[in-house]
Length: 215
Ligand code: URA
Ligand code: SF4
Image 1 (cartoon, rainbow, N blue to C red):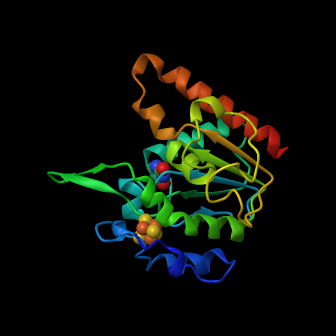
Image 2 (image 1 turned 90 degrees about the horizontal axis):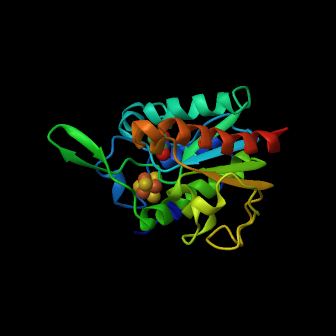
Image 3 (image 1 turned 90 degrees about the vertical axis):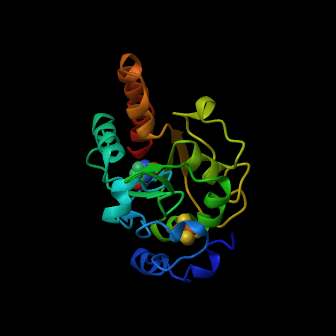
């Protein structure tokens, strides 16, 4: 893929970035999706949360985390004591990747190449919002922020060094104080019934570590 870089304006205003991202053709995903789903929330938030890619609902509505995964995320933030903290939410990949089955659109994981193509938008969001804290939600976001070898299960819920040792952000001018990683909220929705409460509690425990860093 050619990547998003040539579409990213030299601007640190989120609205400007969003306008340009609407026309991005940096990879193949723009072709079948409804629209670019750019980051949203407080443009000067201290906390930026990074998901994987928009889901079906987000693709239709144009905002990140407004579907089922977003409900879990908001509940988790509230239960972790971050309910009143202004946040900016975005995704590693800004277009919905899916396959059609009948009239249903089934989520398909973006590849590492999609994340790489879209990373200039994530970098631009980080430069514009300048959060003190960045939180990767799930392996796709963690890979995009911390490099592809990143082990989420070992590193979740801990303070992580920034800049990361590996990946495109290792020597970039993106300046963050501290980073965190946890699971993707949709993984909790996919957890079997008898394990879901524990999975949710572990997610909240990870977010509570973030809440401590906010204070
Ligand atoms: N899952 C994500 O990773 N991001 C969204 O915006 C919605 C669901
Ligand atoms: Fe551009 Fe990212 Fe959409 Fe690909 S997924 S077209 S790089 S905005």
